[in-house]
Length: 316
Image 1 (cartoon, rainbow, N blue to C red):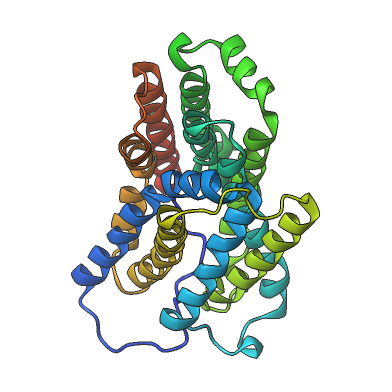
Image 2 (cartoon, one colour; image 1 turned 30 degrees about the vertical axis):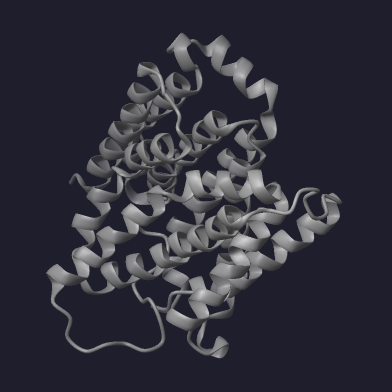
């Protein structure tokens, strides 16, 4: 999943010496490939364990992986405001996106829901433009074309074979609104995280600190839901999907943080906007989906809108 500016520029407590920028950028690009597999793997886990239990297992495994391979700084080194606000936004985002994919009624809807999540770059640029007081008017207007294009892309994709049909898209959402709502609210939460928290972080990446909070929140949600353990014991594929999904999420964070700290941030930011296309392609391949032409066109609109927003935010 695409997180181009959300976690600051430091990726851990131990800082290596000189690292070639090209190699570091390549490591960052691996994160984009890893995150593209998240939607399909979360869906497989949800079908094996249920939406809430599956999400809790994924992030619990992710905590273990991060503590082994991406140890955080001592808790006292992090600014308190960053821990409080950044932690709350991070926990909400990660919980909402995982649950939204798991709660989708079928594999195809889970891909639609994940595409709603990719409105966050558009929201981020609009939010950043809105808080840039000296040039707020011009900045917001420059960001609007990309926002419109990306939003049309989501409507096109969710409309399915009907194409750009607001009534069809509304019907799909009305049939199971919670996943779409969670994905939308999660996208907004991540845009706030990306804009507001980097200046609070003191140059430290809180991913490995916040991940246990996500796991705890998901376990609370699971026990409160009363879902329990699945009636049919999950097979090896389900457990492999849990480990694989934890690896692509946690590993993606580790690779991304390393890349933006030591590599080319501009290169990674531009490349990250290909994530929706890669995610849809990976989901279609892994889940055996046959996606319609309007869906693929909608995905490209989301990418184009995000790219327009990136261009507008860097235009002088």
